[in-house]
Amino acid sequence: MTSTDTAPVQAAQDVAERAVLAVLDGVYTAWAANDPDAFVADYAADATALLPGTCLRDKEEIRTAMAAAFAGPLRDSRAVHDVQSVRFPGPRTALVISKGAILLAGETEPRNENRALDSWVLSEQDGAWRVRGFHNCPEHTARAARHERGPTRHERGPGGQET
Image (tube, rainbow, N blue to C red; front, side, top):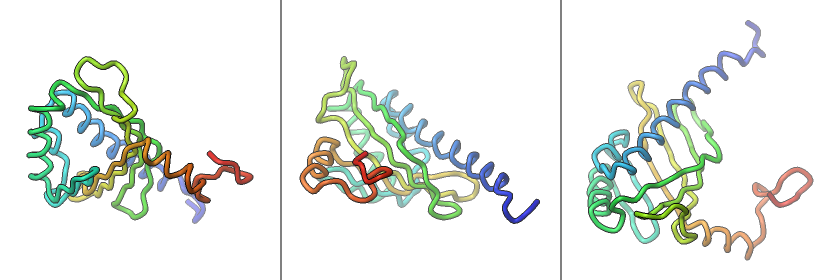
């Protein structure tokens, strides 16, 4: 193996990415079952969730909030997600950016106000990936802010075109 052979590194990253995505799939499967215990099963004890108007400061607060939501306004709902990117800024840390949406009971398509941009931070500890942080913001709000200020350099593609 030469110093430029990146195949083992890429293989390890592929394994890590599959494990990270499996954690998120488990969260969304638990949502579909309206099961707050399964929802937080892969959350770290000190995980945080930042939602518009809400800051949940640990796994138990997140579980309690989801139990109330599943018993009330989110009863029989499901959430969908479309992963946009998975990055590994450190050897045991993952940052996932996704688009998410909530489909309330009886809905086949999410309403615009139920679409969000999500960021997830996960870390590997003792061989298991855990959710450490979650943040979301309404997609329509983010889109409106982007159009007001114009795209950042990170939102421009090759040649400076807006992506």
